[in-house]
Image (cartoon, rainbow, N blue to C red; front, side):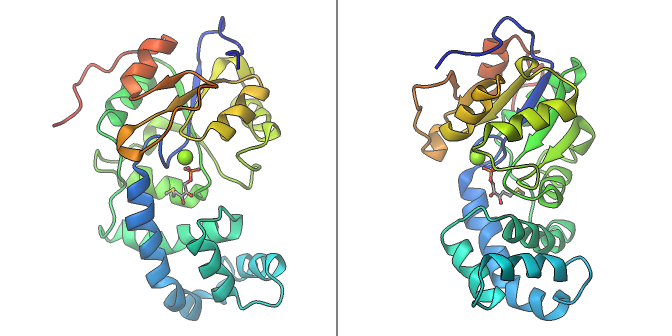
Amino acid sequence: MSTPGSGTPVRTVLLDIEGTTSAIAFVKDTLFPFAERALDGFLRDRGADPAVAPVLDEVRALAPGHEPAEALRGWMARDEKVTPLKALQGMIWRQGFESGQIRGHLWPDVAPCLRAWARGGIALRIYSSGSVEAQRLLFAHTEAGDLTPLLQGFDDTRTGPKREAASYAAIAASAGQPPGAVLFLSDVAEELDAAATARMRVCQLVRPADGTIASGRHPACGTFPEVAARFGLPAPDEPPPG
Ligand SMILES: CSCCC(=O)C(=O)COP(=O)(O)O
Ligand SMILES: [Mg+2]
C-alpha cells in the first residue's frame, strides 16, 4: 500500500495504546484481570449511579436475554472491544490507578519521544479502544510520570470503530488538520488500512516483545526513535532509561 500524504510534514501524531505505546501483556495480564476481579463488586455498589446505569442499558441492548455481568464477562474473555465494556473497565480501573495499585506501562522509548515531539510543536493525540477515561488515567499515572499535559486530544470507539476510515477522517477534522499531516501509529494492520484509506500517514509498530508481525502493507518501525527518524520528527534528546 502506498504512503498517502508523504510530501506533507507531520503536524499531529495519533497514537494507539496497546501494542504501540504500551505492552500487550500489561493490558492482558494487569488491566483486564483487575477489571474482571472488581466487576461484581462494582456492579453491586455502583450499578445505579447516573454515570453507570446508562452504560449498563447499552450492555443490555447489545446482549438481550443475558445478565449484564454475564455479557461483560463473555466480552472480556474474548477480548471484544465493545464500547460499553470499555467504558465500564475505565471506571473500574480509576480506583486502581488513583490508589497506586496500577501504573500505566509505557515502553521505555515512548516518553522521551513524546516529550521531544511535543516540545517540537507536534500535536499528540490518542485513539484507542480503551475509553477516554481509561486513556487519561493511564497517561496520568505512567511509570514516567503524568504525561497528560503533552496530549491534546483523546478519542475512543465512541468516535467510531478503529477499522473504519470515517473514524480517522473525523479525528483529523477535530484536530483541525488535513489527514496527510497526521501520522497514525498502531500495531494492528487493519487499523492502519483504515487510516490510510482516510489519507493519513501510517506506521506499524512492530515490537518483538509484543510478538507483532509486520503486515508488509505499511511502513514498520520497532521503536519511537525509529519513527522519528523515518518521518522527520524531532529526535529524543534523553536516552531511554535502562
Ligand atoms: C488504558 S487503555 C486500555 C487498553 C484497552 O482496553 C484496549 O482495548 C486497548 O486497545 P488499543 O486500541 O489501544 O489497542
Ligand atoms: Mg493496539
